[in-house]
Image 1: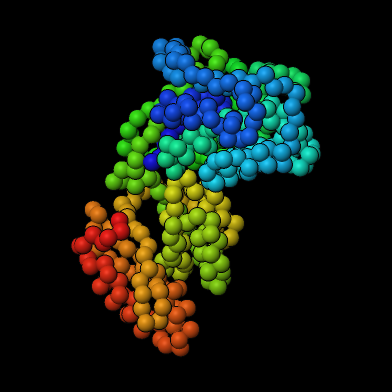
Image 2: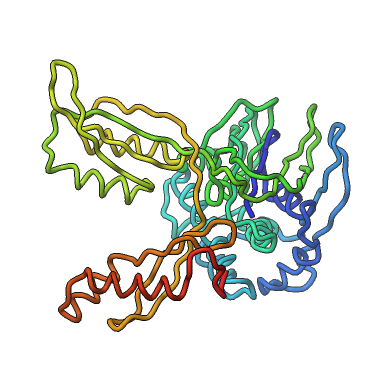
Length: 396
């Protein structure tokens, strides 16, 4: 499942939790998080209420704790989460969010990550917010999260360090590190908290995907504004048409051709789905090479910067495209030379193609001193026998 978090009035930990509970995550599971973290009984009271913000119905989750003035280091929080009775990926993601937050706090206060004292975000309610969001996403089966830009308002707020301007310094640092998109807020006030910023900067891809919408979770914040203080979590499944991609292109006529393999390597490791070159003729009949890159739209900026940095070009053309993809899975087949991984091509629950992985075949050919061609042919024959075209295999 994929989800898109629409945050026209900003985001905080409790608003995110409210969206997840409204989307179907049982409140009882959230209420069990403090105990799973090893916190004393009754140290945290978690409740839910139905509210109206503006003219919109929403769920408002509250996380109340009497704890005050407790300063925790990142190591303290890591130890608490690592020892928790939670799925491993929830623990790893929660620690990653706190680590990102620690980097921002360290930069703002001129110290190191190890010496950062978490104040507000080290309190039990903030810990429950972050771990709860990661657990809720896991429980709802949300594998990919997208989000809209952050609305940033002006003004002032009180913190453990005294009165500070808005957006809060740690919030700005988090957004800057992630290169996150922002838009003007509908009014003044703290609409994006450091906790909310850290969660989305670590977990989300900031774009709106193409998908089949199935349900909405609407969460409300505590504050009343002149507009509905809500966020909406759209949940759904990937449609038949894939998300948007971009094709990046540039014509190069003044670079040593020996450098193209290094450029390709940098782009592939940077997230490109495909990289290819085409001979072209430029003005004054100069021979040149057109470098083309296919990539997810979210990677446009990062890959364009790689092209500009790694080549002699002065600019990159960008066009948005859509791609239709056959589902692909990987299986292992047995040959006289050993096991070989094969990539299966699926169309409507049927396998219509199987291709041996080249690197596996190369390694086995070297091991047995035979031509790679023989290993590939053996693997192809085994795959054709095990996965007959048009037939659904025993494992989907």
